Amino acid sequence: MRGRHGAGRRDTGMTRRFRGVAVIAVLAVAWSVALETVPVARVARDARAGETVTTPHSGPAAVTSIVGLGDSVPAGSACDCDTFVSLIRKTLATRQGTGVAVDNLATGGLTSQGLLDQMDDGSATDAIVKADLVIITIGANDFDSDALEDDDCAARAGLACYQNDLARLRANVDGILGKVRALQTRPRSRIVVTGYWNVFLDGDSARAKGTAYVSNSDALTRMVNRTLAGAAAAKGARYVDVYGPFKGDGSRDDTPLLAADGDHPNAAGHRVIADSILSALAAG
Image (cartoon, rainbow, N blue to C red; front, side, top):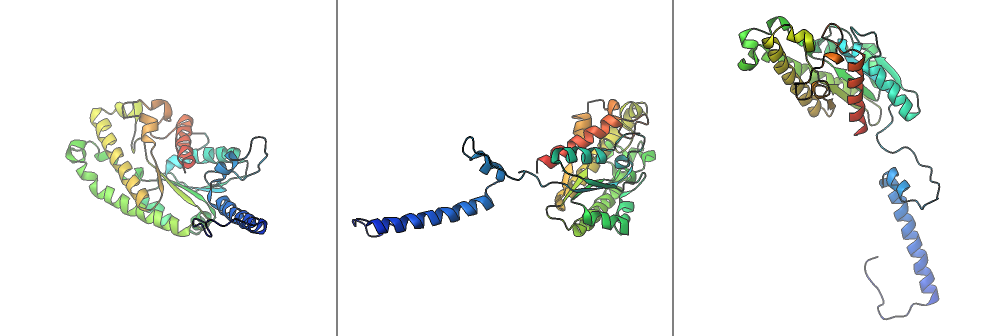
């Protein structure tokens, strides 16, 4: 207690004992509250040297069930390898020392409208209800690469021909995230939305089509990523950039991370995506 009572009086032994009991009681309550509010890692650090303290793992909540949603990238097209969704499951299971279930519902060729429709499918809703981590990669198939070199589709024209597609992408992703969030029932459930290194061909395959193709596809990809990041932020999801890990500031050649088709990630590319998502999860 902050106030002092009976200043100038000498405590009797009984009074001292009474106050001692009161102080012990107050300290016990304070310690109980501290155990509920102080992070576990801090309590462990404050333990006396040599004292054994058994505490639960501190940090982000453990993941028990993952659902992958989206297009051919999480589906693992053109790569006879573990997808990044599978790699994340394996890594988390090892780190946590627990089993982690996975249900990868990604489908090659899926558009954002297709994924929005999939949210009403019983198998998808059942999987999402049980999951505490949903990973979404969607949007690349919403755009027509055949128009990429048209004048009004160029970066210098502000990607005019793609503006309606970008608006539909934002509306669809807003709807997808809203439905996923409404289905989630587990405490501290999370949603991760990834971007793209390119929505069309990249690396050597893109350069073979000329500078206009490279420039315009890069500009569109950056705009798609901004759209996805904005939708994720608005719905409380975590946006994970993969453009930087693949291409740095845009000048890095990501051919070593791509499958032979120049469109999909190879095994190394899936590992880069997985590591990017795992880093985001570890950050909380």
